[in-house]
View 1: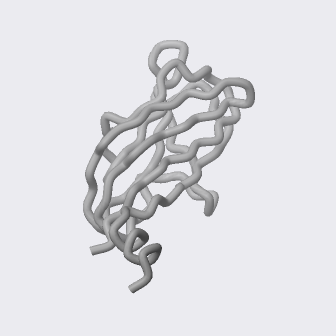
View 2 (view 1 turned 90 degrees about the vertical axis):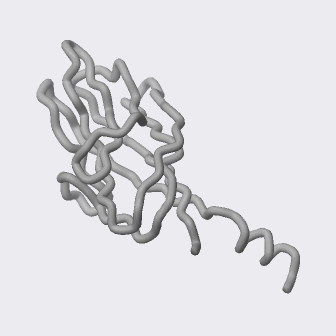
View 3 (view 1 turned 120 degrees about the vertical axis):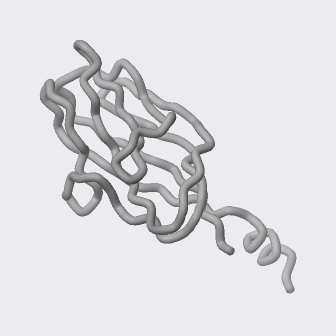
Length: 121
């Protein structure tokens, strides 16, 4: 086996899931790349949530983490009104995880990337 292939097979590949939308002042799910907002995209394999990055057109908000999930868990992004700002939360199966971006302004057009490391086996 070639050394580069062995390294690739031993690593956890990273996947990026994107969400975007314009927010108002009430809590809401952000639509995913398919344009549908809701409680989640099914994840194909077991893995770990690695990071969230939120861009509001001028500032970047981010967080890193180590949240494990199982195959077929559902991934979503939820903007929760926290009294004048949003906390943008990564959710699994409709339940908020510890991965979040805080103090994001209300009434913004948000672009969000969630990075996931998946287990191959």
